[in-house]
Image (cartoon, rainbow, N blue to C red; front, side, top):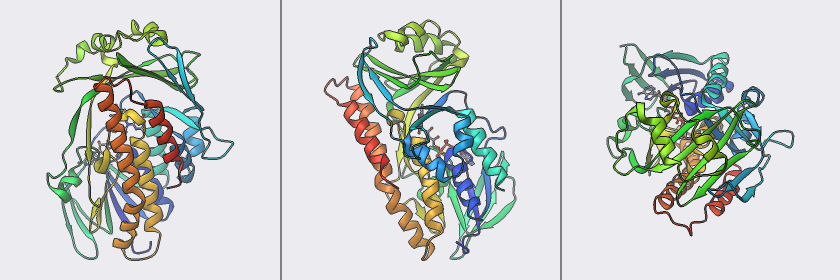
Length: 374
Ligand SMILES: Cc1cc2nc3c(=O)[nH]c(=O)nc-3n(C[C@H](O)[C@H](O)[C@H](O)COP(=O)(O)OP(=O)(O)OC[C@H]3O[C@@H](n4cnc5c(N)ncnc54)[C@H](O)[C@@H]3O)c2cc1C
């Protein structure tokens, strides 16, 4: 890796921070620029499954991460009245002493990852992006939006679904597409029965309850939103209640507690997949910049984290940079494509109200696939 001694990471989200951690651990000098001047993340949570727990161990952050998370084992599938349909046991991929899955608040995850990256020496600059990239055979000259400049051995675009770096590499060949659905999320005090991920499915709607901490959980629901309508933020609570009106059980009991529109996180689903190598020369995309998908399989951040780890492993290997990046692609492309396509498929089947769609079978197949080593 001695030929890759200085790396610029563009984007301080989950993928960029994990790349910073993995590269700093290998002695690479890492600069990271994040466009937000206040490095905030929104306050709901995220599901992280067994493959992510395994990679958090390999990134060397597992204990800190688990301290900030709610560990759980199984995924429960329920019908819309709350009757149990299936229980999918977790797989302890990080080792028998570690949990299978976790729920973690996005803020807590950000604090663990940003704190670790900075402790390891990553130089983080906020409120900054890349204005121009010019590469030659030996490096990349970068001009930043504040007029400053730097030269790097590699630039990693981890700047999310609307990636500016993707545009610099591929023009407008790949632009995000609205899938027809949106996600509604809301935090609650954790209910004692939510000690696992509970997913409520049916043709009249769907929702999930995810534990985040002893005293915190969140609800999510996906809805069909034809035409991607603009909703007034002041109406979010009423709209979320409307979207889950056919769901009973615990979700139905919690429904009337969704009253504060400012605490509802609404997000239309947008996807993009770069269907060719995610690099040109010394500039590479990872995470949502290359393969943003829908949250139906709960693996988007998982794929970004795996990208970061595999990148660091391959950069440390033999051969020219192009050979190493080709090996990175060989390990990442089909796996991310599988997650991307099947997440979108699950959403399409939801919108079609397809009762024959085997969601449980897909979830089991995905867990088997992601349990395979990367
Ligand atoms: C509703 C919803 C629920 C989800 N739930 C889950 C889940 O439960 N489990 C899971 O694994 N995944 C989930 N995901 C997916 C997950 O959030 C993403 O896959 C993950 O955040 C991707 O990480 P990233 O670092 O690639 O991109 P991001 O997290 O989007 O980070 C990109 C960063 O780059 C910054 N940036 C953007 N442009 C620039 C620029 N020009 N210059 C510098 N910085 C820039 C941004 O500010 C941001 O900080 C969900 C997604 C959605 C939409």
